[in-house]
Image 1 (cartoon, rainbow, N blue to C red):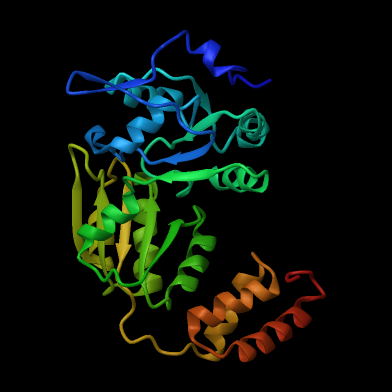
Image 2 (image 1 turned 60 degrees about the vertical axis):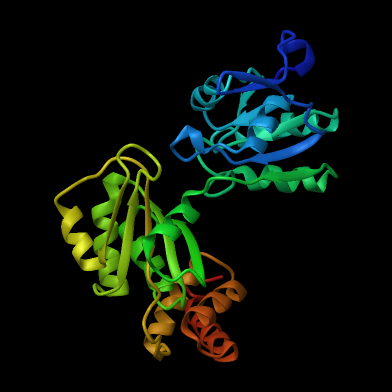
Length: 314
C-alpha cells in the first residue's frame, strides 16, 4: 500500500502555499502539473535557490529520500507540503503510485537528501517513466557536490567523468580503476569514510601514485576540508585516519596517455565482458585505450570464443 495522500488539496489541511525568507512570508503559485526535479543544498541550507523554494511550496506533493531530512529544510523556510518517501529501497513500489498521481494532474517535486536528484540516486527511472507517459518533466537546478568539488579542486575542468562510487569489493574496484586509468579526463568519484583508505590505496596503485588529486569532504558545511596532493600521499594520510562525512574525490587526467599494449587491452576486455555485452565492452575498451575499435572487436570475439566452454563471457 502507498502512503501517498490520494488528494493533496484535501490533505494539506488548508495550509497556504508559501515560504519564509527573513521572516517574510511569500506566497507561491501552484506548481504546474508534472514532475519537477528540484536541487537542494548539499550542506548549508542557505544554498537553496528561490526557484527551488517556490517549487517546494507550490507542489502538490514532494517525493524525497528521507522525509526527516527534507522536513528540516522545509521547516527552515516555513514550507508545509505533503511528503512521501522515494528511494532505492522502495522505488519499484512507489513509482506506480507517483505516476498515477501525475496522471491525475498533480505536481510532484522530486528531491534528494542533498544536492541534485538523479546523481547516484534512483530518480532516473521515474523521470523516464514520466516522460514515456507524456508528463512534463522540468528541472530546478542548484547545488551539486560534483560541480562544487570540481570548482575548488584546482584540476582541469575542460573534460571530466563522474564515475560515482567505486565497487566496495577490492577485486571489482581494482578492475574498475583499470578501466578508468586511461580516460583522458579529470575523474570525479564519491566515497565513504570507512572505505576511503582502501580506495585511495587502490587508486594510487592503479592510476599511479604521482597522479594529482583533491579530496573534498563536507563541502559547504562547518567542517569543510579540501586536501590536495598526489594519490600516494593522500593514501598514506588516510591510512591512519578515517574521516567522517560526505567525500568527493577529484583526480587529474593522466599525463601523455600511451596506447595500451595487447595484454593490457585483453585484461580490460575480460573485466568488461563480465559486466556488459560484447558491443558495450568493445566501446568501453576502445574509448579507454585509444585502440582502433575494429582491433578491439576482434580481440573480444577471440576471448568470447575461448571462454564459451565455461560461460565466462556472453
